[in-house]
Length: 65
Image (tube, rainbow, N blue to C red; front, side, top):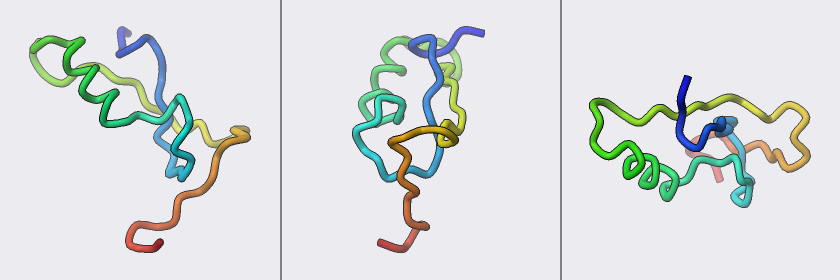
């Protein structure tokens, strides 16, 4: 299956902001531009990559800081 940038992005609840697998607002905008108005949303692959990731920092539950 085709997906944006031919890769998977991590969707683990992670507090690490510098990860290159984190899907950012800039990635979202670029994916929409890449898809260029084709019907529906751009195909984007997500998976939890936290297991074995040395940069994984669990994010606090929503509403907590």
